[in-house]
Image 1 (cartoon, rainbow, N blue to C red):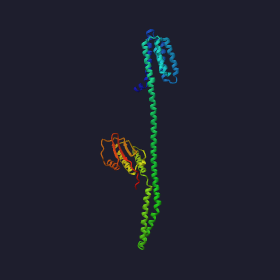
Image 2 (image 1 turned 135 degrees about the vertical axis):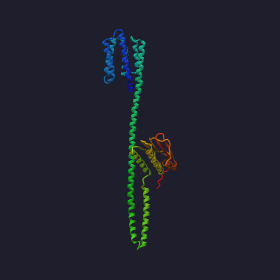
Image 3 (image 1 turned 180 degrees about the vertical axis):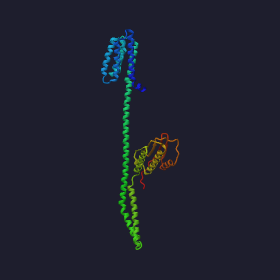
Image 4 (image 1 turned 135 degrees about the horizontal axis):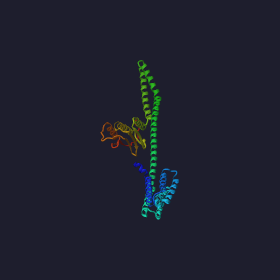
Length: 381
């Protein structure tokens, strides 16, 4: 009920004023000459037409014409007893015509007409109506228009945000699939390279060992020479394996990101929404720092899944000028105090060895903040 009154107060107040002014005309006319059936019908028509005007949008012009005609007949048959209804109609016409604010002051011209209302009362009624109508048309209506524009803008921003969020998630999924495909392609290329480069070497070594086994007793010197040749071939093969692995091994960054993507996917499959976002140039993170970030992320996410009863986990990796920050946060129940078990102790030790800092927030959910100094990227075997 309160919501209905708040949204329709303007219409309700106008209907109430119309009824009050009509009642005044009845009482004033009754005190002088009595109220005829004609007057009752005219007042009923006035109220009906004014009410229909609020309900029927397409017929307002016609309804206003009817109200003007009825008002003229009321003033003709009832005299100035219904002057307040006529004044009320003037305000309604100005609103309908969207008149400028100064046009409302012209209604004070009614003060020059003789009426039973009295000069002071008529002045107060007109002033009250001017304040009421101007307040709504130039203050409240303006505020409502601005509020409507704000709502439209807010809805547009919300749609843009949702569309952007969808695009980001789709891009993350695409990146994960691309990284996964790259790893599979690199594995296939590595397998093919090992087969092409080492297959002949290993097969030749096997044949030589078989031959050396056959002639070992009859020709020991020749067998010894063949064994030495096999040893040299295998050493050469080991050197080739090292060279191939150094050349063909996937980048640590790709492997780390892929593992974190797979971790998020595993959380999503278990009913907890998890998302990875990155900012900055990830190529500036060394392999050693990727190890710290990866291990701490797995430990933090595992703890969230076990203890926090969360519904969402956010993983953020942000590369700045000289530091990289990794944040893992959940929206779970948090905790009153932090106990350094094996998991948290391990995170502290890894970060300390890398020269960084780690902190924990427990007020709204649980958050692990890791700050590490950037180092030159290395490619150790």
